[in-house]
Image 1 (cartoon, rainbow, N blue to C red):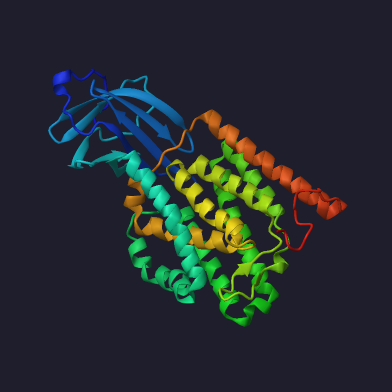
Image 2 (spheres, rainbow, N blue to C red):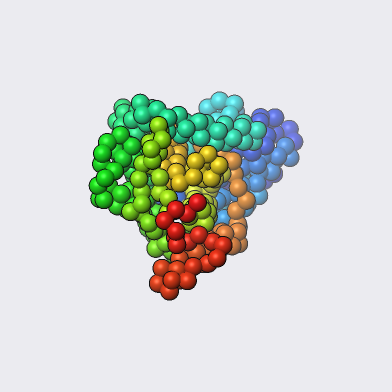
Length: 378
């Protein structure tokens, strides 16, 4: 890709390589999120490039041409996107090119919408199946949380993921899962500190994301950062965490309300939407894979399901990084949509917190909404 004065490609210059949408995913510096570039190539020599990251949402129309196994994009000085530093993209195969973007070599990959949506749906179904299997088999549970994270660590260290936040998100739910194993397989559920640790790790998981939001510092991130704090302040009845008497020994949090789960989901989706545009769609699938079973399969198990499905996703993403990136399902994203979604997250989490405080401190509970007033919220 050559950056400089633009001249449109003549029809004879346009080789019929795979037109349509290609994409680039970049990992931002410490304290920021990912960048997603969506490149739509047209046969008349135009290419529309959309950049989505935590700093900017911009669209440029440029021109392109092929020279042998290299693809050149021609930019104008007035363009907003100038991150293609080397100016040359080299074909690796029919679906992959390589270029230096933001100082790092990255791949440009063909985006197949049908394959990406199929992957998303199958991942959602697979997450629920693996979670249900781990519920019913302690061997699978121990393999997932104790064996796999140790055996796969050398491989994960070589896949090119440097962001501290992603590593924290990988291992914090794994450690969290150890306590679920202890509660389900030993007498440690009798210890109050084990219950407290499960609640504390959940709160730490939220605060990791809040710290990321505040470190980015844009208004949508700040609004959603406060939404995360509201979410933390509304955590209640952790002393009721206990394994049940079923054969699965599910760890229940009976006092966790459905409305809390839903506003938490809103906050979490908004966080990913703001900072990791390449992961928004699959994060919705991850959250749904925890929320739906906790509503329709077994009530009270949401925290257990959330930790299991998050661990499944993070280990899957580290183990098959390129495959997951290639099958990104992009979402609509503008500065206005970021602000609107973040304002909604702020509002619903604040509203829930106010209802919760109204019950806790004024002893006035809403008639039709559970906010923690009952030891069992379902």
